Each structure stands twice: as structure tokens, then as C-alpha cells.
Image (cartoon, rainbow over all chains, first blue to last red):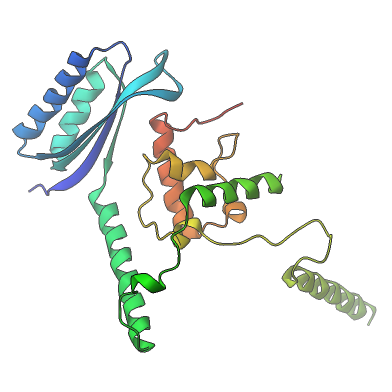
Length: 153
Length: 100
């Protein structure tokens, strides 16, 4: 009895491969998923990206991210197929359902705590837009941590 | 007797040191107070996505190593998740293993 789990498959296609090869690879994965009665939830093509280091003498590659739901056996088969494909220079399979569930639980727990504390203080459980402090700027906090690094040295 | 005195002195010294540690920076001593806030707790990020290089990059100094907790102030739980995310990102060549 195999359970349905969600996985993320990321693969890097060699820069020499044509658009057609990339499309073929995608259909190959799709076929395996169909054969094992899984579902392909999402496909993202990041396009050509520079690699942080050389893989198989390539300095850049095309990244494709596929979110797949299905059994472990299915992923085993996909892994095997991806491994033997020469045009794929690197791949990674990660099971994500558990992690996302944990994150979701933490989010709801935090919300519940907030609501409890707020009702204890006689406030409505949800913060109203007017009392929300300005959302932090992402760039700003990045700068801060970089500053901290430099000072440390 | 002598031994006891020696021990007593030793203890006294240690106490002083502990006090020094607990104290906040004394003027001009070279070390300053750092804001010890976990970025992920503050920003309420539950899932550290390994594909998000922009999120991970502040925790990777030039050398490419993972920044220790004592410097970044990340909490234990998030540092652990950060480590997994960085390792995955490295495998996918999104982040270098080493940079010289």
C-alpha cells in the first residue's frame, strides 16, 4: 500500500540541449507520473541560469522545477530515469508535504496564540489594518545583516 | 587552610568574570551590543525555501560557509532548517560550496 506524497523534482539541463529536448524531458516525466497514477501539480521553468560552480564542464544550465504527488515507487522510477539521462547534469528530489505541513501548523499555532492573547486583552482576535506596524522592507533587513557580518570581522 | 584560601580566591575570580559577561558593553571596550533577533522568527517565515537564494544569501558570507548562529542570531530551530536549505541549494549549484 503506497501513500500519496508530494515531492519536488528539480533538474538542471545541460546548456547544449535545445528547447525541444527540454520539452521532451518534461513529457517523459509526465508519462511516468501518469503510469503510476500520480499527479503533476506544477511545472516551473526558470530558464537559463548561471551555475555557482561548474557541473560537467558547464557554466550554466536550464532549471526545471516539477511538483509531483504520488507514491515513493514512482519517484524511484523517475529518479532512475533522470539519472540515466545524459542531458540532465544535476537533479534533486525532495519530499515536501511533511515540511509544508509543519510550516502550516506553526503558522496556525501562531495565529491561535495571537488570537488568544488579543482576546485576553479585550481586543478583536485579528489585528486591524490600522494598528499594523509598517511591514519590514526585505532589502532593508538584508543590508542590516550584511553590516553585522562586516563589523564582526 | 592555605588550600581553602586559594580555592576561595579562585571562585572570587570566576564570579567577577561571570559578572563581566552579563554586563552590557562598557564604553569603548571594542565589543558592542548586537541585536540578537532571529530573522526567520521576526519575519514569521516558517518554511525556508531552498530555491530562494535571496532569502539564504545573507547567511552566507563571502567564503561560502554557513554563518554561525552566534553571529547571525538565528534561533536553533531555524538555523537547523537554514542548514538543510543551504545544503540543498548547494547541490543545485544555486550557491557555491566554496569561493576563494
